[in-house]
Length: 491
Image (cartoon, rainbow, N blue to C red; front, side):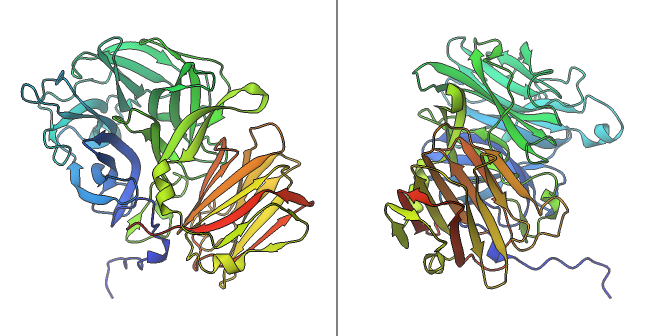
């Protein structure tokens, strides 16, 4: 009998069609997101030799439309300074780093070198910031000979540099996760960094260590510009495990000042973590996250790959309940190219009895967009099923004023005790009118309610596609429209 563990059976039924996955092996945080010469670059934490976390590399994929992704060779690998942890990439348009020939525009990546041996020995200075550069449009990368460019000042958690050019100061900004706070550094040349300020000690959610910051400006509904700071943490999320919080405030080029200290979440679902925005995209804040949760990420039952990314999303500021300013998420506009002719298209009517959606779902092959608009939201349940007897339930609880997703009976759920659960998100707008969009791909649903103010991302591992469905309101509910549209496979 062989002493080697048998490789798990391949699970093509759970490989999403319009969410990025590597062909094989482990993936986590998105890194180095940069748009350059018409190409979106997606780098990510990658272990090319195992389907569980291990010595971190930067994997790499490219796309020209955010729909079809081409996996590229590994961009960065561990070296004498350590593993290659998370970071970011920018176009150094004026070659201020000096890493390219005169007149060139190198791509420059900042990342964390993590010295695992020093970590295991109990030290606290094993994370340092380093650079790599590319002179061929991001296809190949060269580590900077002078690494690290930012030594560790004595912080055990000191990682995930996110770069941004500040034109008013003619300096680069680095937002860096420093344990229980974010440190802001600046440099004129990407190589010599000065600490500007710190933010977050005692503010916001602190159920776990802070990670993967991102700071960017957005116009508000009133036309004024605010700055948004994303901070991921694990554990401590609103539904357990990993999640991403955000702060809205002002940034003067040196210091971030929040408008308030209220805890706010980017996505209330269990499966959106470590997300950041693309650099080089000037007309919108284009975001993508790692679609998993550290509670069970190493045990999800997919093979030969493990983990996917969320759909790309556009982040905008909107007014929510009580006039408060909130960050909303919507699927990136490019995803509309996937939407096909409706299989079900109902106009204004009143739901007085359960509505069977099975005929439409039977033709969707498990990939579909379900949208519901109502002038007067009531409590309701949408139950998805299949011939295997599995069920995914979701809906709105009018008494609690919360959206919810229940995956306890959704298929393969027993690989980890935290997976089989019901999760919820508060409704964040006033009034009865509501719009709901549910994007289903193999193994995942992404919920966008009230124009993206309440968002939930939820994995589920159903053994057969959802071909049965029933929509039932607790009380008679007016519906302006109900539509089910299949989503084409872009691959």
